[in-house]
Image 1 (cartoon, rainbow, N blue to C red):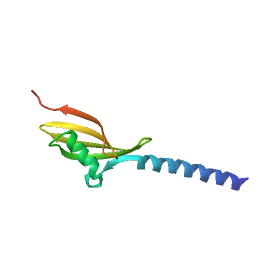
Image 2 (cartoon, rainbow, N blue to C red; image 1 turned 45 degrees about the vertical axis):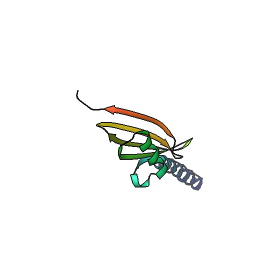
Image 3 (cartoon, rainbow, N blue to C red; image 1 turned 30 degrees about the vertical axis):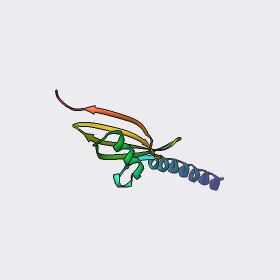
Image 4 (cartoon, one colour; image 1 turned 180 degrees about the vertical axis):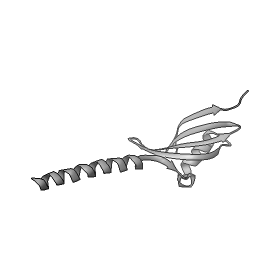
Length: 98
């Protein structure tokens, strides 16, 4: 009986730990050098002249989605691109105090 309880505790802990690791591996910040070239090119075409500064990747049920941030002409942009290089969303934020 004690062995069965210990085994159950070990299995539960492994499942909890495994789920936590899987979640942390499914999304997070990555170096721009790790972003696929076709994703970078798509983002640069979506916002000509953008200087990319940050990248994140998220694993979704549709595949990997890259979220790139950068600036162009005094505005900040956030661009979502699929791993295949399709631009999914472009958000612009103007920080001018005019």
